[in-house]
Length: 444
Image 1 (cartoon, helix red, strand yellow):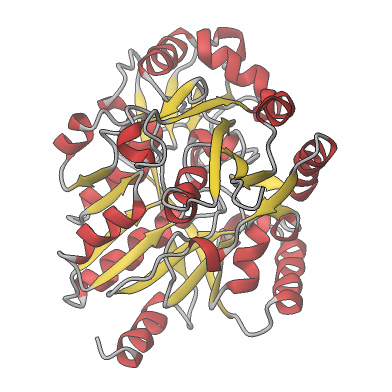
Image 2 (tube, helix red, strand yellow; image 1 turned 135 degrees about the vertical axis):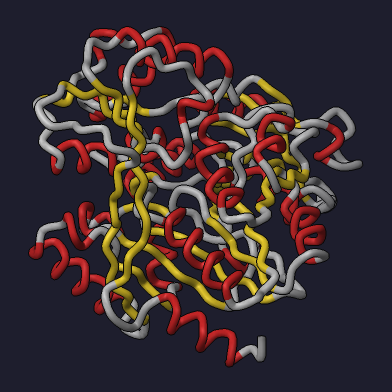
């Protein structure tokens, strides 16, 4: 029939999938989204995208089901098209999912910036990356600080991380630590929002990113888009800054959609030069020159500082690192590890023999993590399991390499020290020169 709707499944992880639906499908009568499938995020599947968000075409909401059911769902619902909408996965992984969809009889669709980026009345600077864990957060923090020092009213908007009550999370505004409690944030969310609050900045997040944008525009003259994983921005940027990591040289061309970011970038930050091998740095430079020769290059170190006067010398330490960086980011170490090595820790204790509940399941799902503890906390049970794991490990000291004060969230029954990391550019160009030029260009 000529008026038959195209039946769609959107594959996602509670972020890009919801955004693509909201901006393209929600009010589009030519399509019928029969389900979302979910992966990466524990507990997000077997929920519902609620009627308060799904719009009048979907009065009962839309089911969110495990990705493992994809081919059965295609057959069951006579699906015409599968939309792939999550990030930081190998190109090979994307094509395997494409093969699943094609073999089941559906088309496979990757939606690009033209279909999904919203425009703003404010100037937008985006910070994205080629992989999870490259240093987007420290870059974003520095940009916000520099703009505030120049008297600009800047608001940060963080890539979607809605893992709780989706309808309540439609638009979230964070201006103080109490807001984190009010919105029942996970550890993963707090790691992204709390550093902005330390700067005295406002940060938005949630589910409906057009509603978020319109509210943020009312209290800002500039907006900083802080990307998640290696996804590209939800908004059309006036300046695209992309962070690359020489510890994972080659990944910039092997992971979706990080390669998109690299090829779109106006500025590429080569981060962590102080801890990377020179050969890898040269290879990354060559890759950028080949695939985006017009990009401006900023060289930077990830400056690590240890709070307080606690010594690690000769001690057996448990290192707690940022969760997503170790899991789907596939990093083998982070700031906590580097600090322990530099300060003479006798041993980094392997937490796996003491892992509890959902933390044990995380190690099973991501066996490459090794002898580090990811600060997983997607829900109350996982936070309790993280606390039990930390307190069970036999060690002299806990080294906290996450971006937040973890002791505010979990009760640690042994000595602990916090490690911070900040972007430190080498010479020029740097963020100051790039931002000053941007402000002059746009008469800001």
